[in-house]
Length: 153
Length: 200
Image (tube, rainbow over all chains, first blue to last red; front, side):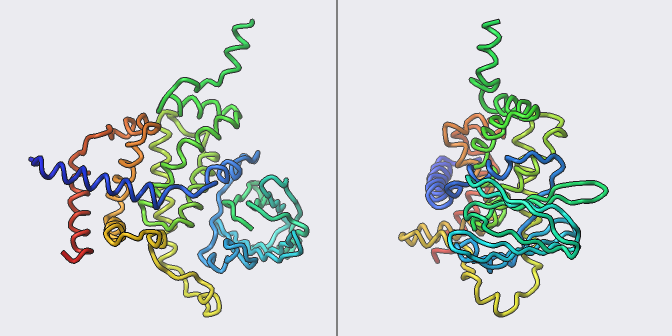
């Protein structure tokens, strides 16, 4: 049986936890908008890719270009980002290779598309900077679209 | 005819709350209503966020997992048998995705030195640097030593304390203002950990 003292202590502890959670750990600003952007796609058979854990070298997140990798199932995609003035160049490599469609969507800046060569390489130039999502449309028996979470490039 | 047009202009979820509202949004989203999906994302993302964070992910990874969960919903939207079970589905999916992501992190291959150098410091609680009060830092550190189940439950309790989440809380059987036995146990554990942190 819980005593009144215990229950008052619980309430007090809960108040402190609530204060810290609300103060320190709210969802990041813009997360809702970025998520709404990420799911505003027409593809039906989609598969969410994960950024690989080498992502911190994605100092990319801090606004510094670099290499990031994402994968889903047996597909791995390496992406290298180079600044070109206000814009950037994206060099990518799909493994296993295939002539798959690649689309880079940038929030408020439309999208850029290309097709990987038979070695799995693709290049996109003059890509605007911003909240970016990469889609790979797999040319396979069962066509499907691999979609990344957004990353700020 | 005029009545029909008026009816079709106000979204089907308008005026609804909690489970009914989300079910109405989900049904509308299935028939291609983007606005309905945006409403769900706006209203339920904090919930998904706190499940991801409660299950041990740092803020950056939690952000990815939030998006992954919503992409998964997009993929499964026609296959959710019971639209009213959406909140439960989001929580389960977020938990599973968080665990999968954490496991992968734990078994990650060693990074080449050059890459490792670029890694930001591995302070597990970078957000705590914002805290000037030492007792707050100790409480935040203690909170993160709780088992995920407790962290998640207490985070849900925090959400449930906000007016706009009252209906979600009822759905999760977490009525506002009452501390159930499980929550009581989590708070006791927290108090012990906190006393340990504070060296008392």
